[in-house]
Length: 223
Image 1 (spheres, rainbow, N blue to C red):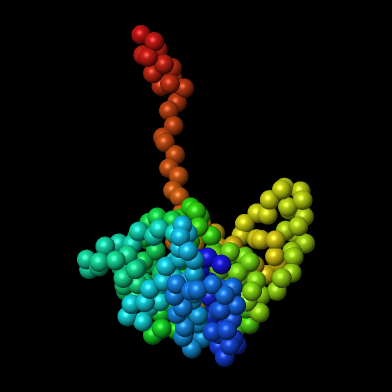
Image 2: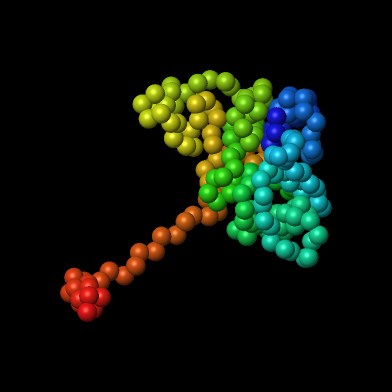
């Protein structure tokens, strides 16, 4: 397995470390951040390594190339990312560029979030589990969590046979969703949440010119 994965739920806290290892598929983890109710893991080898860091009680795991704001002159992106989320929470996503799938857990607040980049170059999958949320950067890893059912969605199967694609945010699995581009999802023990947009493309229509004005402009080009 390469990428990031984790979950937040008091129902699975007693066996959390074992579940995290199961989701990692036995690979050596780059990092494993654990708390009373949450586990965040990163694993992988070049050319697609995942990263993991912890700063002031904030655990951050990501895959891709996030470009954090240069806050306080931090020496590494990892420290800058952790500090940005520590100080601004989900609002930090407004100033992070690049391609990324990221998971954050704040130990002091007992809450965190998952997010993907603005145009969805990287992906994150998630599923509601008893008492919380599980996530991973690929569906196969997510399905290793014992709280996620491997049940095919009849609607997704129809869509695939008819359209040759499963429209997002749905996936072929009934309980597994894909996080839309430019969105984040908050996670906390025993709390449900829905994806929220932190960025959307702006479309600005140019002022329209009447026909007489276009005719005059066209004649001027021919003169």
